[in-house]
Length: 266
Length: 266
Image (cartoon, rainbow over all chains, first blue to last red; front, top):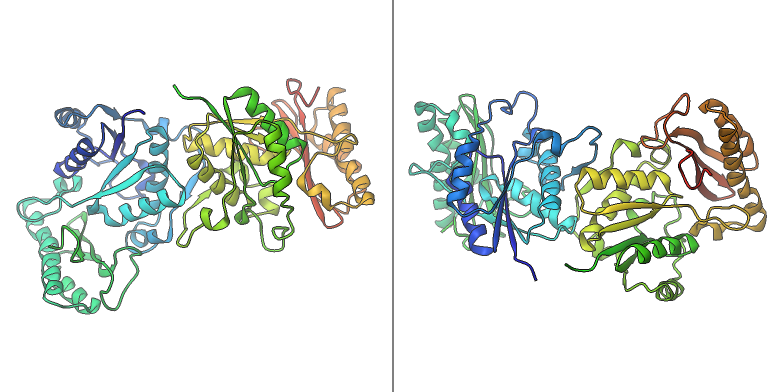
């Protein structure tokens, strides 16, 4: 039989988080393929599509250094030619949280990932758990549509201050970056309280919200079931603390497992 | 490289129309795979899901006689397990005609065909042109989602009276069958008028409608662009006459090309 393929779909502006996905792919499969495509259909009007960073030369150097053998860089016209008109309705796990604040986002993500997986069939496809809900949406879509790939979620990569790596972090001023650290710090406090025995979701959400005071606006800060992303009263099954908030003009998301078996919760 | 696969998705109750698809697949590819699945999500409440014919033993005998090497007969629970929740929004070519009279139909068809093509990847997938709009919807979905298969549309197979073969024809009484022949007869008259030089869609639709008087109810009887299925004034590009009507409790559809290059129009 042929060699196994590992696929890492990205929007470019690659950082160590993306490169950790690439390293997982290189380690777990024979051939690593990466796509770089700033997918217009997952941005809403007023979001940062036009200013989203596109440092292509630097990205290609980073991927070459990791031993990536194939990089797919389609144009919007290749992905969405004239007459294009079919789309994916994502599963219910897409409805809350990001789905509420970015109503067209996951439809765009699910559609483009489905397309990419048809163009680049892969035994394994790698997503970062920083975009936790996205990972769950894609897992469920792949299962529901019987797409023959395993969707692997890789742990969040953080900088020395704890800030989850994101291509959007370059938007932050030094002062904003300092305030953004409240997100990971607050998630840490929630995980500490969880390890200390707190199982009431409401109590954990209070701790989370208190720690997010330095942010300019919070979209959501919740403790929910890690599989369905539905609200819970108490943590019995694996749970996840999800945060989306604004620092200046930059919207950031982050999350932390509340699950003794997870690598991040330990 | 491996052998090429030809895939024929069906709902069973196989007739010569289905078998003609199988023969195309056997002729054009190395391995022919057939699915038999009465897909519940493409039936609306009140349609004939429960009484749809399911002569499985007879179907399997017919397929064996044609040299089919693989038959996939999933259960509804296999295709739609608990937690299933992703779906396809079909392209605009699905919106009119069948899409208007069966609003949830093409969403169900597109979703199940996408799933089947993930389970049974095939170089070529064969559809009957009797369900003309379905063929166009699947063609467009496959193009839009980059599904790596060629969607082949095979000509309508008719009985000696001209009635387009359909698994639903067994619902017809002898008297109803006689009246149902008005559909193909009327389509023939439209094609004759077209060959005689008539290019006005409205005139051709009048001829079509007049010929359908023996039916109990007509859902639509139109002459439209064969690619977009949008209404036209005059035939310049290939066109198609589409009919859906009721005879007794049975709903029948049929169509005829209005295109000098088509096999059916000649």
